Every structure is written in C-alpha cells, then in structure tokens.
Length: 125
Image 1 (cartoon, rainbow, N blue to C red):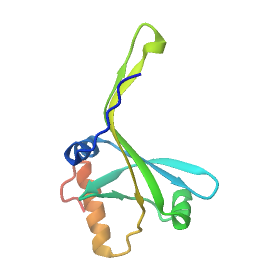
Image 2 (image 1 turned 90 degrees about the vertical axis):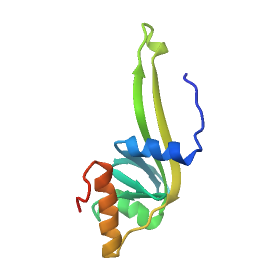
Image 3 (image 1 turned 60 degrees about the vertical axis):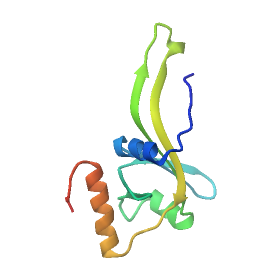
Image 4 (image 1 turned 30 degrees about the vertical axis):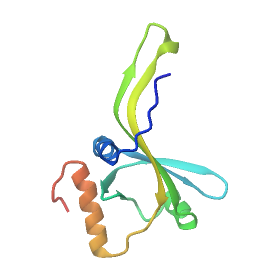
C-alpha cells in the first residue's frame, strides 16, 4: 500500500479539483447507496453539476439532498513483476455537502459557465 496523507490546504484541494476530469457523486436513499460519475465545475467552494431533470439520482436527491463526492487527479498506475505489488498513485478530494437544485436563470447560467470553463471553454455559455 502507498502512503496516505490528508490534504487540508485549500490551494492544494482546489488544484486537485481543477485537474480532475470528473467526480463521483455518492447519494443514498433510505435503503441503497448510489454512486455516479459526473462532469463538474468548481468555483468559490461550490461544486456545479449538470444533469437531466429525470432519473434515479434526481429522485434520490429529492428525498435526501445530502451528498458525498470524490474527485481524483494525477493518477498513475505503478506496475511490478509481482501483481501483488501493483499500486496506484493519485491525489484526491473527498467532500460532503447538500445538493441544491438551481431554479434561478442567472444561477443556472453561472453554473453552466463554471462547468464549461472547467473543461476549457471560456465564456462558452
């Protein structure tokens, strides 16, 4: 196993989030956990996600808006002659929060702009 180091410095956390290609969103209804990979954008301590207004994750979030997410960057597979010595090196962020559905037009534009900019499209919305 590789070493694990807790990162609490906001600049390092933001650097990891800026490099991550997607995040995994974890949800839970009363009975079953649910996890889904999603594209995202991050700005000023807010994670923006874009989704259809229908589907399993939306139904779960309507019942329970508490979420957990994980995003990783700088992922590297470490190989070895012995398969038991394989490892993966990465930097990741795990966070908790509460989902909020954006209804205001200007908030939606802001969220889509942040998401687009995360993937390199400046001023795309």
